[in-house]
Image: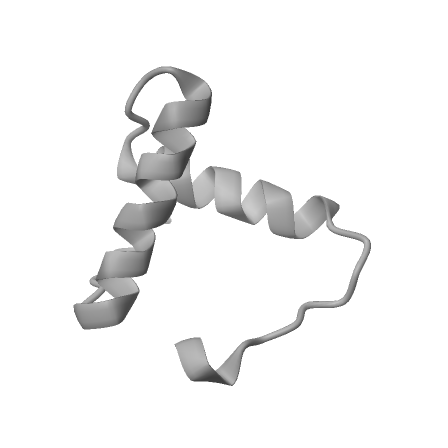
Length: 57
């Protein structure tokens, strides 16, 4: 199964911010799929319920 996602505007900007931050921590620039995988892994291991910031949606 393959999923394609396009981000625009502020969501794209936020994704690039996260990717830059992850690159600084990892010591290399992760691919976009790797960034999404790391975000999903963090979500899955978080014991707190998902909290959405409606201002960012």
